[in-house]
Image 1 (tube, helix red, strand yellow):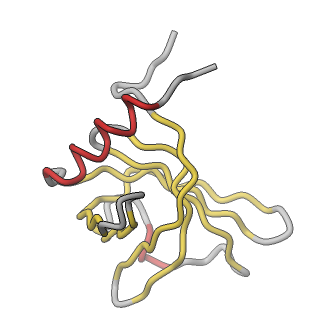
Image 2 (image 1 turned 60 degrees about the vertical axis):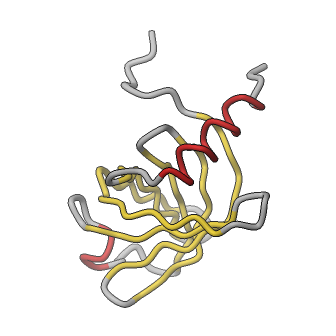
Length: 115
């Protein structure tokens, strides 16, 4: 049984996550109609208050059409893992998803065929 409230669509896409005047190159791992899974590597697990639960962030990525999509988000959860580098995984909620994101997500889910 899937305990998630919203269906996730897997994706692998570069993006930029920004907060408090700082930015990180991140990778999108999945999308839903109102949330995004992101992760990034860093040399330290201390990313400060920038990405703690409840923090407002901006997420920018480029759709396949070339259009840049900018999302206002809030960090809902954060996990830290140690591999070669520190891996930070975040679940972020989109605040009032813009129409361009809704259209992008709809197109993406229509083309996704799970195995």
